[in-house]
Length: 494
Image 1 (tube, helix red, strand yellow):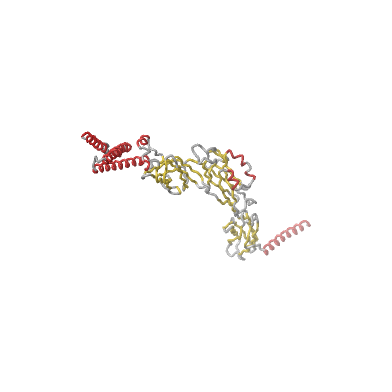
Image 2 (cartoon, rainbow, N blue to C red):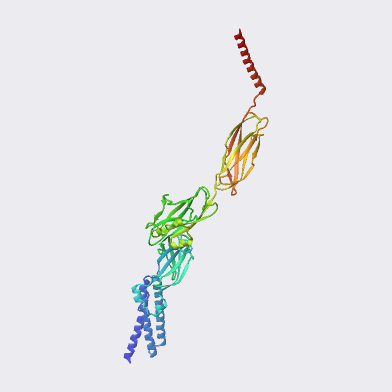
């Protein structure tokens, strides 16, 4: 009996020793993996001690109080182990961005597809330390990261994604998850902001990859519709962004513009004409401009105020041969989409250029005092839009009168000519000298005023001749001449 007593005493002492084998170490919070190892050893020792105490209690070899103490020690060790395990699990959690691809949606909107992965997994020592068959370990789901929140930020920290933030309920190790955003601001580099687990966060500034699944260039133009006067020019500016894993050389083409409209592409930086261009390895974006020159007069294909829709195509080098007949046909949007090339639809609205030409065949007149003067001015529509309500205003000298025929020309079509006829009537007591009359011409085109060049007409008033004095002088001259002749005849007869 004494021998059995000593065996029981040794077991009890061993249990108490195991229950206190791992005292608290203040460094466990800093070196959490070592703290977990210490907590696991204490947990296993307490569990073994509690199992032995139950066996002894069943045999009535220990008291109920001693069994309760062993249970409490085991419960404390279990909680401590759970806390250490959770601390290591949360410390080991790590969300990584494996892909961030920028692409164009069906409606032309820029989008970003971000792929996230659970890169936790734990280290080799942690995996050995934590028994994967342990029910506690499995219940904590170490291969899952819950409640992952993702948003996209610009350089100023503002959210540029739609939705502003998206949530991934759980992210399992080895199973990446993709989230898709619409870009509210067109960027090539941005920050992916991630919040996960118990409040851990990461902010990764990344350069977006381009979707190389389609060999095309994205074309965008802010001036999708422009008005231009006939005889004038219009310019469309483009931004070109490469989405290609194959080609980096492309050709620019315009389709559906009438042949009477001259056009060519230019490089905005160098002003050089472009037909083909190439992206460099360091730059996937560039600029280009389209200059359009309209004819001076409307034609069948270029009608005033009738919109001309057309397309600008950016064709990969491998597809250039397929579009050799682009001038010979009118392309539909469906046909262009089948080409699978970058394109943008634009619109040009020709506007008439109203111009009133004023010509005066003669600007200097002379007349005797009291005599009326007739004059005329020619009016011609030199523009490309009809002129309405053409009239002339005359600034007359004091007390002069005028007659204008016609007073108003109702309309003047493109290239048409008409004349204004004037009769200037000076007062009866007009003084001899020069007088100036200013003619100001005005009209209206599409409710906009159109003025012609002012003309100045000079009129010189000459004095009337003295008839009596003239007759007297003529008679005197005839008398003198006659006297000389008579005197000469008399001298010859002597």
